Length: 293
Image (cartoon, rainbow, N blue to C red; front, side, top):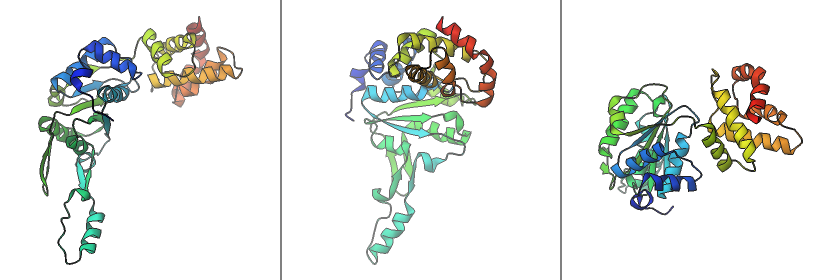
């Protein structure tokens, strides 16, 4: 992917929003401003919000905005430095030693080094965007390691020395807020909370990202999803599920299922939890009819 200068692609929050829309991501003014400031100030961007509001999609759109590859580090409980920084390919090292015989060989050459996401970005900061996805799923020890990385943008490899970034990398962190992050990490970042969009914006997103979906269908889905999210569900549907629901209902309608039956039959692509389905089922007909009105 060709490199794009951040100075030309992020000249203002309005320009950021326009470029993101070209990548089929609709950002409101506050999100576009946070992205603009993070790029221009050279600070990591921390995006928090409920699952499904578009945090990871925002990172993908930012990478497209900058014309860079997205390097994703998916966090999980127990993630350690070897999965985030680097590790040596021991099997290949042993094989090389056997083949070398009496000859000397540098087993710490680049060809034996497996670069994980943080090192990948350090090696080519102008060509890659680092996404640290769901940082709240990691433990405090890994969070401390990441904070050290964000402070210096360098990695020390005992066998090779220190590798430093030649330019300031673009870093995006996402969190579902399953736990509180350290204040030191928050202070280092430009922060933005992404909430669920209002019905008008969600209808626009559905129209942008769905297939052959009528505007009336998109508006009905956005209205119904807004009502459903207000219920005490274990797993409220995200924006992606709303897009899928609109697509699925449209497919069923074209196959002969009339409204609102098509919406009811396609509910499995919107609600994906048994208890939530049982809870919402008695109200679904009324919700759909209200949304279609």
